[in-house]
Length: 372
Image 1 (cartoon, one colour):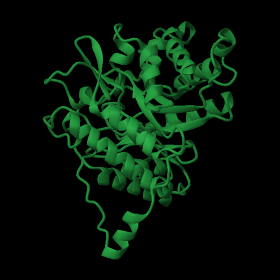
Image 2 (tube, rainbow, N blue to C red; image 1 turned 180 degrees about the vertical axis):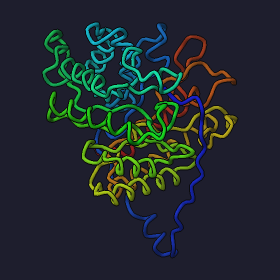
Image 3 (tube, rainbow, N blue to C red; image 1 turned 90 degrees about the vertical axis):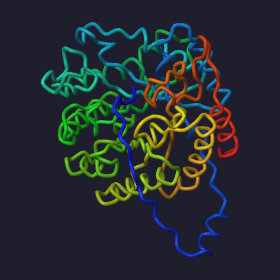
Image 4 (tube, rainbow, N blue to C red; image 1 turned 120 degrees about the vertical axis):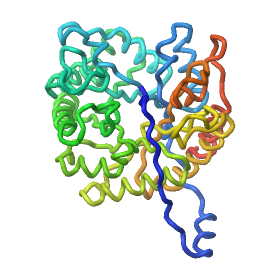
């Protein structure tokens, strides 16, 4: 689900003044992460390659210490010809397998089917928003009736551990044209968000609406994108700010989050929590053009360790509630592929799932940083 065009971000970290103060900060203990704080994205070969055993991989997620996964709930695949022809089979398999393994699912609901898409918005069907936000809202209602607290999936399958979905992410990275072809995005995306908020609130009043992950685009860095949304009237229509802080260093990730928090504070969102619904370094050898977060497999493991230490350190002050690594499983390495095909904690090799050093680094980070 990653973008095809990668945009680089250059950030300037804030200077820390005074050696004694710096030493005091360095000596301060890092507050433990709450249980379930770290999650992982599930896409690519994990869900699309028939040779991959999904249940086995979800079991490996649990032994790594993960209890949360984020996955695309593809609207076009579920309702290809209209709302009267909903096919839950693929989603049922994923949600059921996750429930068996004790994994909570965060759905990112995206991809307008042809019958609902704004055909005038561009030629890429994956990026076209719905022409009528009400059709998207109706699909959310259908999903909640299937997977929410009173969902029909649980009634039809009493053998499954009852694990209702209570968080719904409204689209993905709408501030870049790769995922939202109507740019500038704020006005049209806010219309979708408002319709989604009403639908979620009516179908499950206890559910939470998660903002579509705003990312560091060339013309719209995350903090600026958030300000645009507030100015368009989005405030009050989401419960969680979602950020995808793709950048070259752990310090720049924290700087992105500081600026996002400052933007929220300016618009009465000081207490709105932040979720990092995508976070990654890829292991393409540092050869992906214009991508500051591409490194080697050893470098990926090192950066993973460092960034989660920094997130743990600033979690409370920045009100960060979760962070999802992108992604669990990448395809077999191909030098021609973009960075997103090298981002996995595992990779396919010779038709088999092979762990990368980043997987062991994540397992160790969860053990060291999580509350006992």
